[in-house]
Structures are given as structure tokens and as C-alpha cells.
Image (cartoon, rainbow, N blue to C red; front, side, top):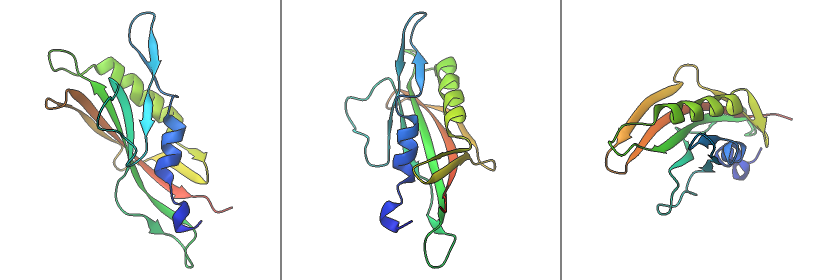
Length: 145
């Protein structure tokens, strides 16, 4: 794989985008939008969304260059309750769906798995922006075909 083709963030965002769903009421649900690195707008964001970012450097496993590995962070955002507490059931559902979709999955020449040495950062409420944030750490590597 060439350096210009190293887009695991885009592949992982495509895997998650619209495939994670949140229950908003007893009879209603909505699909969650996922953004790759540098694609997330700063305005008009939904109550729930996911961002995928590089989490560290990309390393080559071969010489000449061709097989690579690295880490990504899946950041789950969920608007907090009006009293500033996290919507724990909604967040837990998002985590469960991401785990199912990501762990051990291959897409567009990339293999993804949750990082067993650093799986999750517990949910934290950001009182400045009103979102509860949870981070899942994902290891990726290119698949040599």
C-alpha cells in the first residue's frame, strides 16, 4: 500500500457511519453520523455523533514500505441530560454497537480490532459543550494481498 492510500480513519468512519443507531424514545430511533479525521464540522452537530482520529503515529512493518499499522481513537459524543449527567444507557448502546462492528473487521484493505491493552476511556461529561464523551482505542494494520 502506498502512503497516499493510508486512510484507515476514512475506512473506519465508513464502517460506522449510519450503522450505529440510538433509541431516542420508546418508538423512535436515529442513525448516528460518523466523521473521519478533519471532516467534522464545528457547527450543526447532532445530539449523538462519532469522530475517528489518528491516535499516534503510523508505522511501517516492512522495507520497502508496504505494510503499515497504527492506532485510531473512536470518540463517541452524546449530548448530556439537562442536569449535566450522562445518558448512560444510550452511550452503552453506542459502545456495544461499535464493538460489534469494529472488532476483528476488515474493510478497504485495513484490519481493525479494539486495542486490548487500552480498550476504553470511561465516559466524561464536558460541561463546556454539553456532551458526554467516551473513547474506544482501535489498532489497525494494512492487509497484504
